[in-house]
Image (cartoon, rainbow, N blue to C red; front, top):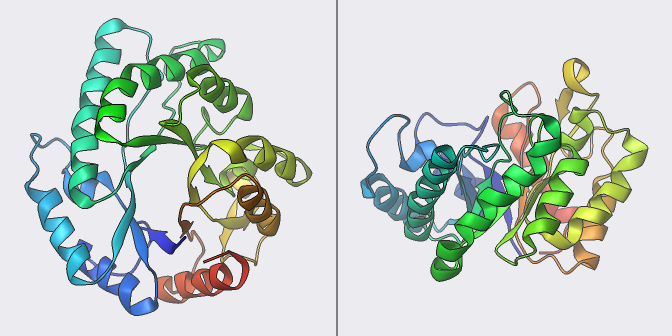
Amino acid sequence: MAFGLIHYNTPGDTFEDFVKFAADSGFDCVEVMITDVWAKGAEFSTDRAHEAREILDKHGIFASALTAANDFVQVETAAIAAEVERMRQVARLAQIVGTDVLRTEGGQPKDIPEEKWAGAIADCLKACLPFCEDMGVKMAVDNHGVVSNNPKVLLPALEAVSSPFAGSNLDTMNLRWWGNPVEDLPGIYRALAPYVLHTHMKDGTGARAEYQGEALGDGEIPLSVAVDELVAAGYRGSWTAEWEGKGDKAEGYQACLAWLKANCPG
């Protein structure tokens, strides 16, 4: 098990600046963003993924996950096919940068009724399973935004797929941001823990417009409960910090790393 951070709200102007910061600060791994290896709107190419892998290896850092930036809230056949083919390409990039985890989105609501969200996500995940199984790549659906942040959407989707290649990325703060009361979080962590393939350890206070990011341990999130539930469920992935606080980015992430090392099994 390793300590990492996501390439988001971090020091540095380039991918190498970010990786060097991670290495110099004592992190073991990073979550690579899809834009680090595939520019938005560009034709598919593996060149940038190979370059990113060289940078990671140069600084002794490995990739814990690759952000997929997909949208699985789809019901039209052509849209589903396009998302599945794109994910196949993203999985190829993940293999190149050296990770077997795709940090996957649920998707955006659009004009699709809420009662169809879980089924739509499940159908897209199932359609990706054949190539994920062949490539040894797993999809970790993030509890993010207004769709998969709802446990009543995310859990049924994962239960419907029922595959070791489809699980969850547990973001400890996002569930609170969505509107879940703090006192409900332990039960949600317990329900999600068996599915968790990757984490965003994140702290803060408040929901929606009242949300304020904090360094790990400085907010209202029961982080130690999340760690305990994950360990009890057999989680063996990385502990990945995400900091959305205000102030110096390097100091924010270094404070998060100190909390991880003091509270998570290494």
